[in-house]
Image (cartoon, rainbow, N blue to C red; front, side, top):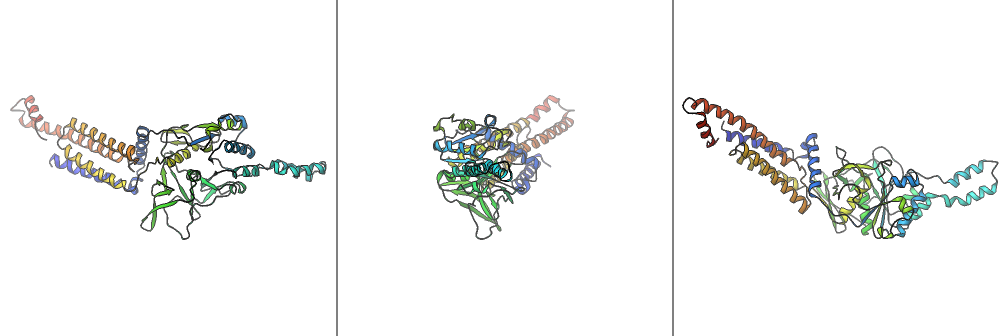
Length: 465
């Protein structure tokens, strides 16, 4: 079979194989390809996507310094109330809790009162006094009253194992069952009722790490008991912009409905088919302004730093354990900053996405690349193939850079075009190497007895193989 025919057949087969991988049902079964795709995606964010720091978000950090100053977490609720009061007095627009408050704090006066009532040695007057002091030591009530004075978003955590506390109101309630493709959770860790009832906004802190443990995307909505509940970031933006409702952009696929995006006021938030948002990270940890919680408690801060801002209360402490992996940092990334990035992206409309139609573009790209490479490869030498491979991979690089920098789009299977060209390049090089060697040997065997080897080599240099 002629070399060109073999090259065309091989190129066609390779292209068809890579086309099949653009279907998620095929791609997701290949763990290796998925991991490689993560590497390419992470590298793209590091190389292309540099953004300015936000001026709308500040993080109050329950850091190691704070834990050393005020003891281990959880802190007394009146201490948390002190932080909230300081933020309110400084003009914070919205206060967001990336910490859970699921347990009732014992009232020390109530504990002593119960002991006094069963003890014969404690005078009645002391018991009466303790009874009068109950409201002053009800730290849960103190915190609830403080939270009610401003726009506060409390966090809840959806999970599959633990059910405790109270959940806030759903953001969307369906009157009829809807077969919606979305993350669903059977249980949650909420806040104690008195705190849950004191605020208007509640959002979940749940994230969905990829198989390698890195958090690249986050759900905007989760389905629980048939209704939809918002994320902490979505509620923070809703509270900040004073938006009452959201609307869903859905598409019918068979008997199911899949997400295209979420409309929040005049901001359209593109999502994947299950309502998850690609997180547009500003940078590694501590890219946002941080203020130690101990400094807030001791009033060691400039009040202007919180004025008109969304203030998130979270932790970078190793002991509290809310540290994660993300594309720009493999370990030690504070969970509170994940929510901060999502909030900032929505507010500034700085959102990256992989629209469903981009899969079609990806398939066309793979076909065109395969066709061009296969046609050209049949006429190139070994060195030419190397240059062709590098050149086409460079063009793919420029194409992806343009998508991300100009339109903030990311190919859903980012590494496939690169791997396709690399596979074609290696396959053609290996075949060409053995084909040329075999052909050279054949020519030398035929003409070697008539002409010199040097003359045969010169003839082969001009031979169209």
